[in-house]
Amino acid sequence: MKTYQIENNNYELIKDYKNAFDFETVKERYTEYFEDYDYILGDWAYGKLRLKGFCDKKNKKYKPINDIDKTEEYIKENGAYDCKYFILKKI
Image (cartoon, rainbow, N blue to C red; front, top):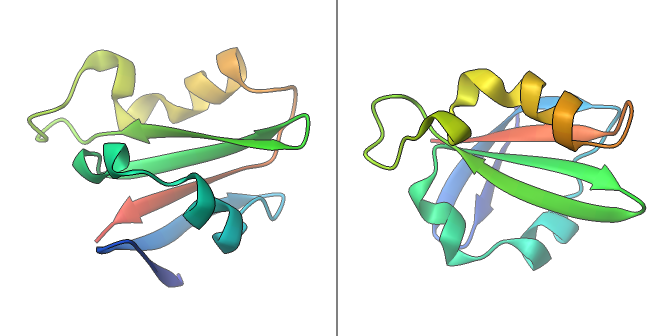
């Protein structure tokens, strides 16, 4: 997979459903808020990118609501029907 540097962090693109990943848009939307998360999920709805942080269970910021194992559930419940999305993993 390809890696990207955003701010001072390196990320690996581990999922890119329907070619959702747009590096320039992610850089524009990224804030320091995401630095504590192990993963960033980005999904597109109505032409706008939404970002959400997720964690591994070993992360001190872990909560069931941001469990990386629940990304598919998150997309089904919160994303637009069959929306484009991607997942970045912090490396």
